[in-house]
Length: 90
Picture 1: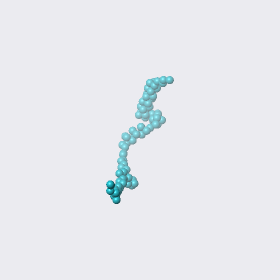
Picture 2: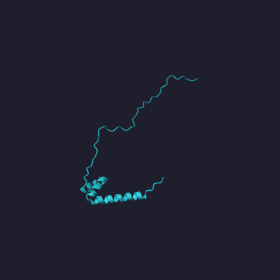
Picture 3: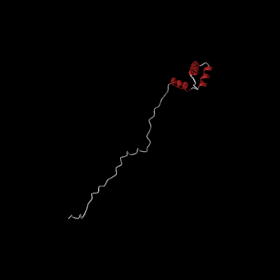
Picture 4: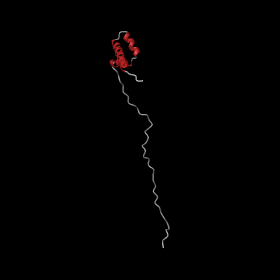
């Protein structure tokens, strides 16, 4: 015969959930580092020339600006070269 089991005890393990996600950063805004740049007058002039429109360049060339005349001549030569080398295949 078998002996009857009078009482059963189970070991209960209490598990605590651990959060493995990193904590959110503080909502406080952090200062962003900034630098101050000062352009020389030569750099400012170069920037102005680079941002100049073709109409402004033509106007300056008409007023005798040698740099503007050279730029217009260079652009005209580039256009002529582009149109002479471009072939349209239909």
